[in-house]
Image 1 (cartoon, helix red, strand yellow):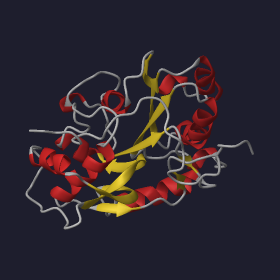
Image 2: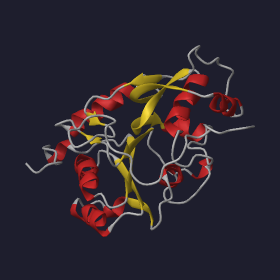
Image 3: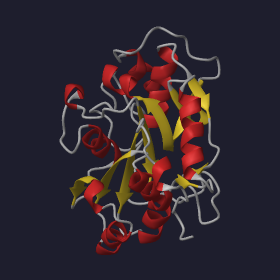
Image 4: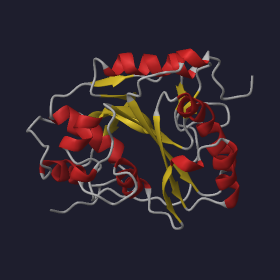
Length: 256
């Protein structure tokens, strides 16, 4: 069976789509695009997910991958210049436009995010999708949970946010967050807090989403089974090299 296909009888594929899967492609990295899209495209073909793809300054070679996997029609925003991660994320949630939260067009209860160096590693993506949904039944946000130190400026920035609820920071200033290459969240959370913030550009959104959840007393759950996140050629998590634009995380140099 070709890579990325799902062996299911046609009459078993009348599935309820509970996830909008958003994929961000960048630059001239067709191998990453193909690795990321393979099993996602299979799920979209079955009707198991709503698929949205954003393209930041992708090459002709990467565009050919979209055609090869039959997902070009799922591209909702393609920018000839790099819009950076979070402006593109807002456009994907809004169906292609740079809209405020009331312009979000996601109709599924959950949103799932993939950077292009993340991919479904499970042999059976349908079973994997069901396992993700089971996790979401008892969480508001799931992903591979890390802990990170916040500097004083970041903590000061958090105090200015409308979602700050006075929860004290841990003594060591280490806060939990789902690493940003893959995560899944309740759509209602994105709408309520207008996420991602317009101030977000490229780095720190995963950390601050984790902090939003902590401040609001919501549920963050650790889950990474069947998915390789920011993976290198061996599928090792968080070992993919950084590409293209870089910046300090949001709030890093906040002065008030």
